[in-house]
Amino acid sequence: MVDATEGADGDARSVADAARQAARAAGAQRVLGELSQARTDAIVDAMARAAEEHAEALAAAAVDETGYGVAADKVRKNLFAARDVHAFIRPMTTVGVIARHAERRVVEIAEPFGPVAAIVPSTNPTSTAIYKLLIALKARCAIVLSPHPAARSCITRTAEILAAAARDAGAPEGSISWLQTVTVAGTQALMRQREIAVILATGGLGLVRAAYSAGKPAYGVGPGNAPAYIERSADVGKAVRDIVAGKTFDNGLLCSSENAVIVDAAIAEEVRRTFRAAGGHFLNEAERAAVAAALVTPQRLPRPDLVGRSALEIARRAGIDAPPGTRVLLAPLSGVGRDHPLSIEKLCPVLAFYEVADWRAGCERCKEILGYGGMGHTMAIHSRNDAVILEFGLQKPAFRIVVNSPTTHGSIGMTTGLDPAMTLGCGGLGGNITSDNISPRHLLNVKRLAYELRPLSTGAERLATSSRQPRPPRTARPQTLHPAGLAARIDGFLGAVPTNESRGRESGAATAAAPPGDAGPSVPPPQAGKAAGVEPAAPAGTAAFVCEADVRGALDAGRPIRIDRRTIVTPSARDLAAGRDVLIEIDRGGR
Image (tube, rainbow, N blue to C red):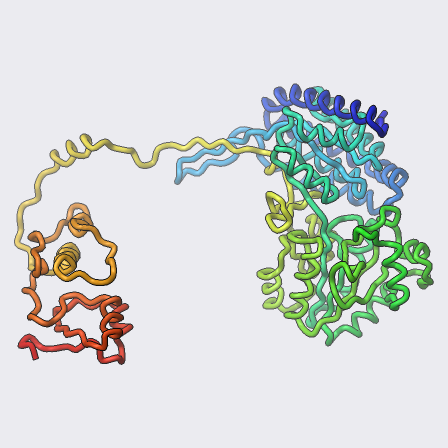
């Protein structure tokens, strides 16, 4: 039995309950952290089977309690969590050595993060609970659920079923817990309990912010407001079918469901016809105002009593006459923001509709929509132009850009190759710590054994090693200008001829730059006025070395620089001097 008593007394009981459940989870964690991979997998397998067996009953319970969504679609979401998520995480190694990097001599070892506080929403209550319970136990983390008060019974029932399956498979008592008394104060207290190691928060923006302020590592997910762009090269029929399927799936309750359609003007009329044929009803100006008044609060949020309702129900509540068979309402808009109420995230089958000149204008409109409550989350592009698709991938502030598929299904990995998940990170753009689809990997810490690759020898050891090396016989070597000699020659010139630019070299650096074991020809110390090296000094009046700063100074002063074939001129100096008659080359005789 779950108590949802309001008021100070209910808050006190909920806070005490949070402390009790967190302590139970900590006790279970000490046992869970020692389980083998085989035992861990057996527990998760049993939980997934139980969730699959009860998928229909839990879906019906969710609709009965919340009034949100479509029972058949909730069954599909429950099965997605029980089957697809489980199939994805089943092969993961989450115990002991998880990777060996032989070339770097590094061994990676999995360590469970620790007890999880999991906040479960009312929009997708049972499927989110199944998913979070599976990924937590796969990572050997105990978990405490905090149900949304509007869905506390169906979430609690889900936890009871999976906890019993886990216990029968060998999980310790307290591995799966839930708040018995549910209040906001209790949820906040749970997130701050000392025993809680990490938070998985799915819900409204306020709740996600509370999770991030709890002083614990947290994975939070905020609003979506996903735009879907139909580019002129798209298969219009498929694009419209995908958008309608995504927006009507469970009556638009997933935060990644489409919220706006952006269409190239060249195909706009064809898109309108196709939407009408698929059950779309375009609102006129008066109808649009009526739907906005019924659906959107003054705080620019969807009214809870219309969340997850059908298009016909919303039309009826708004007092408009939509044709029978209407599946989605489309509101033509000219802008985004507070002056356009239906440009918000709408957790129901209502779509904003925009017409743009081309993909560049569509790109900007999508950015505006994402900026109004969907940063970092999800969007879709329907196109057969790979160049435009890539541009959207490069430019859009969304971390899931679904191509030619519904955003609702594609974002969670149901119709794409993304990691199957019911919690979707929005990255830094959305104020989240990750842009990933959350999996057991995010509930693991990784220890690393790092073996020595490069022994650190002491100075005495290096000296002893050097003294034992036989000296190579002296051989005559041709007198060539070795890099070390060249560097010394430059240093000598710099010591005698200061310039207005620091060369970034220190005295003695030239000798140190010679490769080990190949010191090159002996180079005498540079003397003032004479550069060291093989060649004699340049004739009087000619420069021995010219850099870019020298050329720039000569140009500013309106004077030439005299050079000969022995003068060292840097490439950047030659580039700057090209075509300017500033470098005057003379022969050995000084002419």
